[in-house]
Image (cartoon, rainbow over all chains, first blue to last red):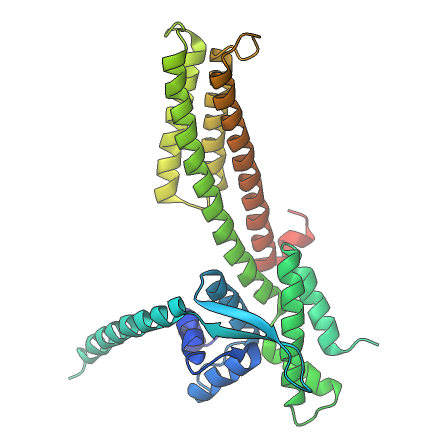
Length: 112
Length: 208
């Protein structure tokens, strides 16, 4: 069974994937490694969970993907943020900022 | 001899059989991922390294279920768009029949033409707000539209040799659209059933 953090993460996975690609194009494995490093192990979803999110974001036009073959390397599908994806990430960051501030306030209201 | 990763990828491909193009693409992508993960394992090369990479990736059935759920959303959207277009075209064709044909307003066919359409539209509007993925609601809508179109055909006496060409063309357009809509409703039904099967394996095993 997924832990509480994993359940909470599922609702925000698309935004987290977009953020992981902000620094530049990457393939699925690298995206998951970036997410793990940034969350310092807090986000421990099954690695395969990211692929439906990548596919969904690509269908929505927020990501683009191409097959690339590095010299002496394995052929990989590399994902990149589109212009719409960058805008969507900015909007989701703002929305998250408002939401987390509201939750902080609500939770803080119970303190004595 | 096939390895742990090969077996996993083959099983995932079978689970994604509802979308062959996606299955091909994802199989290749997932295999790359798993080989990267296994190579990063200290025990590489070994079956244990492959097994740990597969375990971290998650159950193929659960991943396929997420793809299937997304496919249901897309199919539902396509079906509703087709339904909206069909409703508009059926309405326009119905109004044109009123202009073009001089039939008895108390005859049965005009009444069915009108009220089956109104019923289909009412159910469609309710279903849009209440349950967008309900096959029953879509089937009622589809039935109403088919009844309306069939009544329109009877009303226009299309089986009579001297039916006006514009009446024939508008009826052909309606029939073509209802065919496309039926295809989408059936496709949605299949995808809903497949998603339910992936989420509840026992349904598939018993063939329900």
